Length: 228
Image 1 (cartoon, rainbow, N blue to C red):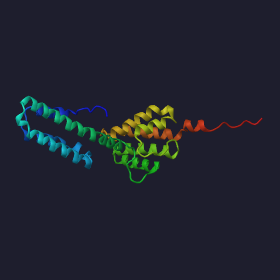
Image 2: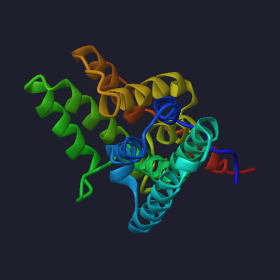
Image 3: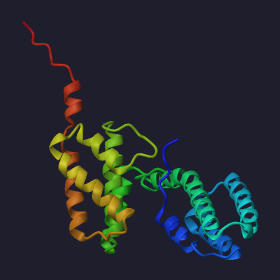
Image 4: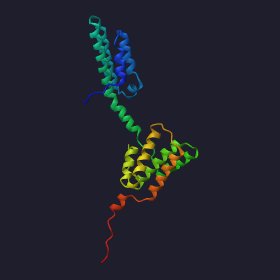
């Protein structure tokens, strides 16, 4: 197991515990672990584990009256860091998994064809919904590559992965493909608004790829035998 990076929230909590009373210290810990990032991600087993740690921590606080203030503070700080570090260690992989799922290109329950995605893009552009227009055009581009067998259909594929796979067959467009993938992610998941120019550039790339032949396909065709 690698070292656990302590979140800034843990340091802030530790600072707040320098001069706590027992109830205040426990309340701060409960408030920290009630935050949305912990609550949304935690599995049921984490709930029971954290409750046991909180119970242990409450017992520890109740026994601190006989200790020196410095020793009591040290125990409180170490316990707080241990508790939050354990929570982060358990929760972080689940949050990362959610972020990976959120970064997928397609989110429709029923798969659409490339032409259907392109039609959705044109409809969105007509009502000046540039975010949807860009996202749907990029999906149309990727789906068209799957339909042309340039890409294998792959659930969970990200925009960067799609761009890299397409660039392997259309190396001259590698730069524009990377830029399109980055723009898709920034619009769809980074909440950076798209513009008409963004959509038009992506449409031009899609049209250019539709008219081109993939190099990988050309390379796989054996040369014709020349009769002698």
